[in-house]
Image: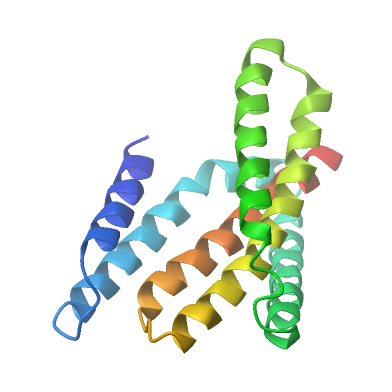
Length: 172
């Protein structure tokens, strides 16, 4: 819980600190701290996967890297702005997952949990497309805040990795 709050706090602090040459080192430190705390948050899930089958972790990592690379390249080679319309649908899907997870906390349905995992994986893949094209458009418009762009893509990568870990862990 403390690492989650710390990661959230660093992300908020990073958002509140403007991008400039003077704040660049401080913001890179915040990014490193955020990544470190996010990695610590993955610890219990990684421990569970190791206890089930240690090969789940490299399989999930390679799967995540492949998915991320394919969707990023698709966004890079697609027509400009062709995936930006996905933003509303993706956020709506994320809201649906959040609400159904809250309902499932009381119901305890394995089917709903599994559906949320697969839907979450699809939504995170969509976010790679959306975020990559959004970063390209922002860069074209003069937004050179590469540190925040890194946070966007890092979160996409970590969320895909987390979803794949859980899916592979359930199938073992």
